Amino acid sequence: MAPKIPHKQDDTPEDDDDGLIDLADAGEEIPDDPDHIMDEGGEGEEAEEDDADEEIQLQNDSIAHFDHHKDSIFCIAQHPLDPAMIVTGSGDDTACIFDISRPPTPPLLPPSYESNPSPSGGRPSLRCYGQLTGHTDSINALAFTLPGGAYLLTAGMDGRLRAYDTIAGKYLFIAENQEVEEINFLSPCPHPSHQNTFALGASDGSVWVYKVGRGGLEVVQVYYLHTASCSAGAWTPDGRLLATVSENGSFYVYDVFGEAAAAGASGLGSGARQSQAVVALTAEDQRFAVEGGLYSVAIAPTGAFAV
Image 1 (cartoon, rainbow, N blue to C red):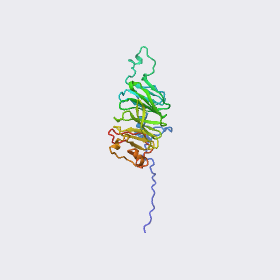
Image 2: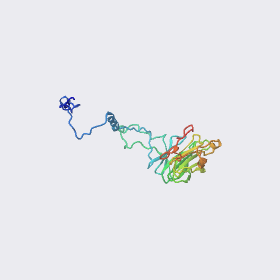
Image 3: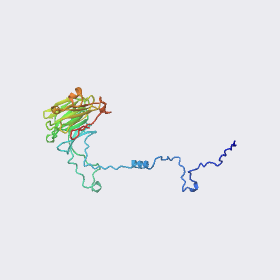
Image 4: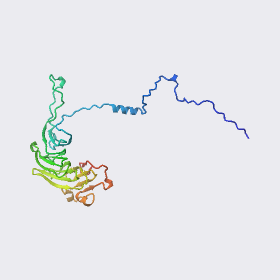
């Protein structure tokens, strides 16, 4: 039996300084700063920080401004035949009319070149051609009727719907209705055979279709399918169908004038709701459930689909 040979331990100490640079080989010694926080990020993060700290220069290149309102502006409407004629609705319960085609004339020379410079106050505001009153709460919806903008409609959080005749630019008040607590939107109908017709959506979920004329406001249709606030609506480009959405995610399309039914169109949906709408989609069907609800709707120019 061979004798056991004891294992000879290596008395050479391990080099714990592998990877360290000898002080004699160092070009420069940086003293330890206990207050300095080491940057664990790379050059990419430094570049992002530099971009975040970069100041963005904003330039005002507008041709004019309008500041007659005393509170926030919630809606804007543009005349369909005279795009320079603008109406704004505000939290000060009024609507203002102004013309952007005639902005105030700017000075020929900057103030530094004027012999008698005027006090610095910026550019003057556009002139208000008319201020419409009569609402007791914020105006949050405006619309000119189609096709010629013969009437201006104002609607507000007070539930009031007011109509004005725009003949000769006088904006004469002709009628008012108040059927709901709050009105969320106004949408003019482009149907060539149903001129000066429009739709509105209310906070109680109802949808109203009116026709306006010099004799006043006439109710054409009323729908009560939405069970939450009706937040938005839009007509198809031909004006035959009206689509609306609500805060609980429901989506309906109405055959307001019966033309789709007369053409034999079949609807999407079932039950009593489908009998009033050609399309009825709600969150009861999980395929169409939208968390948080729906707040806008638009129809494709071809009228083939809605988004």
